[in-house]
Length: 427
Image (cartoon, rainbow, N blue to C red; front, side, top):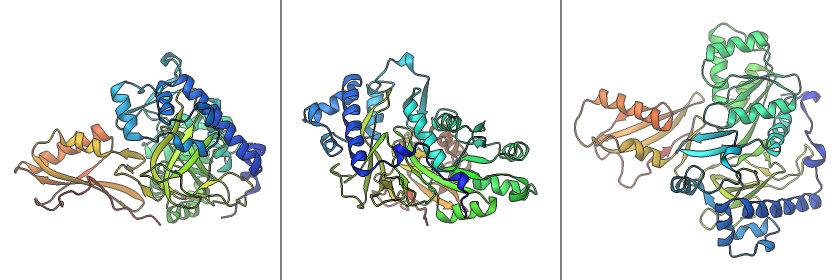
């Protein structure tokens, strides 16, 4: 759809359009800065830098980083369990933190005011079309996870007025959007789809009665079919980005939608998942990120997501490399309704149910909504409705998601099968 001139442009044009030579020098400077800082302030990162066997003064370019071991989310969880709460990665005294966030696992993430992180959030929101004076409904959670507060700060930096809605309360959210003349939406694409359906069920004409102009979606896949549907129903622009709670924002779309630009304070490598060695631009591999957050520097953090980089020029004028679409996961960790589900969490739930002989979690998608079904083989015959209710309650308590239970005959789940199976199809 047509993008108005008001919704196009740069938050920091000089930084976003650096010539190639200047960008390479900037990235090398960033490498030196983050390596020196992490070595001096984060005991865990200092140990990993020593494991590389490369003298600190010899790590000066992105290519030099390949010697540093990749840290994976599962390892981060182990480190935190051994030395709670942050596994020796914290680089500031804990009393200097503003928040402690809790992601499924549980994995703890420190919240610390970082101007660079706020600028990154503002940059991607500006690229998505948000402008001073927009009234924005922020439906990302403000509880436990960092997304709600992170985007709240970025929106304020752009000059937007934020409605801190969080998730749920759909009828109230629709009413607030109409009453306040909300012009922007921030949240998951599936929740915006729910809002659209609920608004129409209430008798609203989405284009006449609501005033949405721009939307920013993250935490879930955004199929092009869903983007097109929502843009047409609301007559709005929708852009997306990519990131994780551990390392923050790693890529964002511009008005051209030719991939997700890598922010200037982030270093991205695409690596062979087995060896951790970078692959050439354009080849598929695991997304590995390095960031220099003052409270929590992470160098070569393996996200577990598969993607590839485009190094071709973007018509928008930005010169950063672009992450193309997320193609899947390296491991069995699966994102459902914006929340990661780990095999270890499934095992934690099953530990409380000796009457279950085998189980497999199947993730599907219908009408742009994720569904999680637990296929259960019984070790002994029990009251099935009662077991299903208890299992659903345990899943909600441990994984924080709704689930359905389907009992299947013994032997239905093949021996050695994956604990989590993702059957969703993305266009």
